[in-house]
Length: 242
Image 1 (spheres, helix red, strand yellow):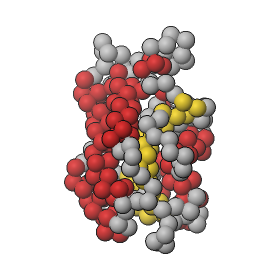
Image 2: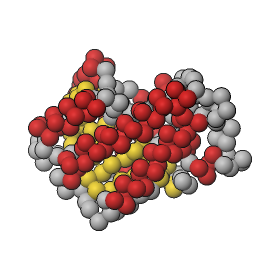
Image 3: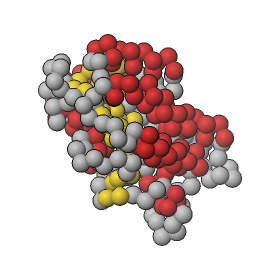
């Protein structure tokens, strides 16, 4: 790796939006670390990107496993000494999720473990490396379903999507974005949340109307920001209400 290149870590990057984010960052001449919990799939994704001429490597990282997070942080520190970009992309849904009156509480806990506690722990573990970067960037992959305003707007097309575990986990991720941005205000690190839109991925049974290429555009833009924006919730069309 050219030591002058910026270094980016994308969690859940073995497929879908995460893989496309890694691809687009790599096309911007950034050294991309493909993070995934599955060794075989993650390595295959990194190999695919390298075959496209992208500077990509794989690291095993399960955002729900404390030891895995620690090992990944140590490996990045030893290899690169810093991290310029962190994209907290890894996320899940759960078929036992649903409206508040009937959703499985166990499912809600699983969703929070991956969608909120995972990014929180990964960010804490990698923050010392982000502080070593000339211009650190943290992008949290959120959703319009995590917007309190959208959830409460009867005219919204997402108003009827009542998935208490998923929606609440993304709302919590938005709170992490806001608070971390304020904590780091005045430093060289910018923190923002990305709403990729309704993208066709395994997460929704490929029912979305956007492609991963389209969905990756907003998080990549936020990862490459140079205008000082921090603490924002953005989509391809502009600011998303909290």
